[in-house]
Image 1 (cartoon, rainbow, N blue to C red):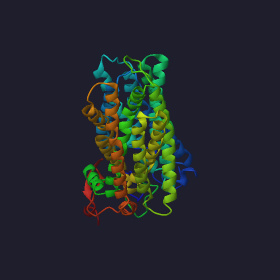
Image 2 (cartoon, rainbow, N blue to C red):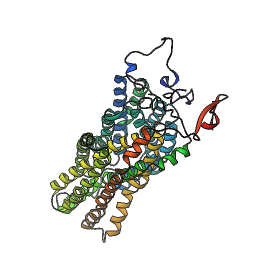
Image 3 (cartoon, one colour):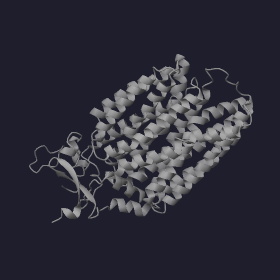
Image 4 (spheres, rainbow, N blue to C red):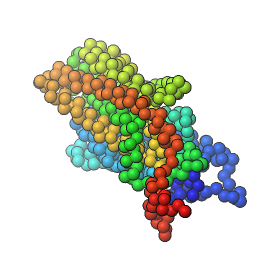
Amino acid sequence: MTGTDVSADTTPFFSDDNEREGPTDNGVGSPQPEEEESASGVSDKRAKLTVAVLCYINLLNYMDRFTVAGNQRLDFSTSHNNVIFFICSYMFLAPLFGYLGDRYNRKLIMCVGIFFWSLVTLASSFVGKDHFWALLLTRGLVGVGEASYSTIAPTIIADLFIKEKRTNMLSVFYFAIPVGSGLGYIVGSEVDDVTGDWHWALRVTPGLGLLAVILLLFVVQEPKRGAIEAHPEHTLHRTSWLADIKALCRNPSFVLSTFGFTTVAFVTGSLALWAPAFLFRAGVFTGEKQPCLKAPCDNSDSLIFGIITVVTGILGVASGVQVSKKLRIKTPRADPLVCAAGLLLAAPFLYLSIMFAQASTVATYIFIFLGETFLSMNWAIVADILLYVVIPTRRSTAEAFQIVLSHLLGDAISPYLIGVVSDSIKKSDSYMWEFRSLQMSLLLCSFVAVVGGAFFLATALFIEKDRQLAENYVPSDDAPIVVPKRGRSTKVSVSSVLI
């Protein structure tokens, strides 16, 4: 086993061509010159096409997730419960796919997950509101698709590119989160207005999802795990899931950045579910809009918020990556410092957007725009931090760990918590108190953003050491490795096989 043969223990059924075929000495079947450009076994052109396909899938999934939230024909409790049930199923499935993604063929795992997601999304579009349990079930199962790719896709990008090129490709991939979310609001509101039936909004993405499966099968090529960045003297091997979790918990940069990212999820989850409703209530409070007593209601706030989310996502991700790249010249702690600055700058603008809602709608939209732009600076950088402080054979598990924690303490509870605080403040069912109570409860987002900034500042204290440990990782003599035994795998210590 060579130092770069990092996938030799993968079972044949799940292995890909790149993982099965090693180098040949006789020159027969040698790769084309373009394949020799990268140790990953994937040409530069194919690698870029792979990122484009993964970005397309990411955009589709976030677009589908927020299609329901942007649909005002559904009451808020329906859209809220759908998103929460989806996040919970996604959160609990992520560790399973993280475990599989570190051990088996990642392309096939994503194909199965996206195909299943497309089917259940289409099925959910035929469920009526009177069968609420079936709607919750089908929308919850959509989490299978996102869990299957969100834990795996970043690790494929990490195995295709290194250093600044990896950062650039991650920024392209994470553009899809705010852009897809914004498109979800736009599709949910506009398709509903055109067709007069909210079911049609859920039928936009399934066909595009099946196209994604075809692109995965015929365009995406599985790279060799860790080969592009492994040093010749290093031998990366798989350890048990429990050993992986213990190692991740002892990685302060990973843990602290995960908590920082959790605050980002908390704020974005709160805004995603409550911002359109808050903007509508502000319009009613100021007399600019009439109360909605019967569906369908005015969808203009969802449309405007969706457009703001798309634009701020593009600006925020791009600016965050560029600022980080320039700051890296001066300090190796640039990434967590930029993340901290993004959250600390977002906090006052979110506060101003909430407080100005009662006086000026234009000012509110401007401050939301600025706040979301700074908030979006984190997406690609946090992913890059994870990938360079965690060794290749633990990255899918690390992605899953981060997903579970960020959703469990972030966007899975934040909309509910905002609603509970709002209800506890509200003294009556008047339009004034509906607006005031929600206004006061949303101020929690600014406080959480400041806490997130503190977590990233703490990350900056450890980032240099943890990055060096990951780049110069050498397995300990007693670490269990996986070796074949009569056609199966068994775990033994290194010292027991040394001669």
